[in-house]
Image (cartoon, rainbow, N blue to C red; front, top):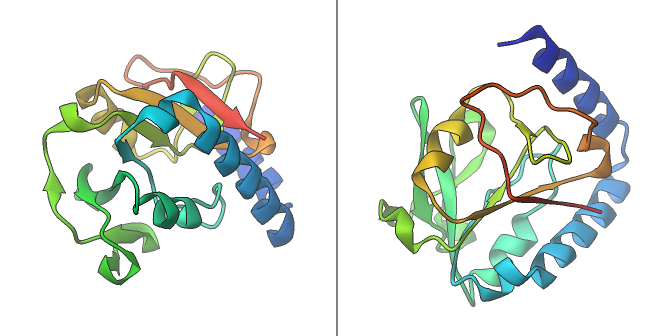
Length: 177
């Protein structure tokens, strides 16, 4: 793991931590609203989302709301990889690795059915480079999925340049409000 990436993660983490809970919630609502208006989101029938951590854009309401109209999938950490499972409601979540709520629904292995992937990240730049948390989970999963990729983040997570390695997977667009 590069020192440059570790330093950038630390800097971004401090900026996000400085936001009040009220400000994070307000900004999360704006980002999610922009995502809902996005043409790729509107046309998608199956969306791979993520169940957010406290320092990420809050996706909990988005997942719950759209699971009534779209097929919502969430990642589950299994060893060094992510598997993809169907979200079937709050009562079908369990606390998984890294204290993330994970679905116990149907395992999805046919990634060709995924129309859109909404990707978390510690940071993003204008070229679509994504700075993850350093474990490489999404860099191993995303090459298997050919769908459009949208990163969502707070403005404090948008940086001039994210250092990129050959195995890092970019997003096609970023929503930051």
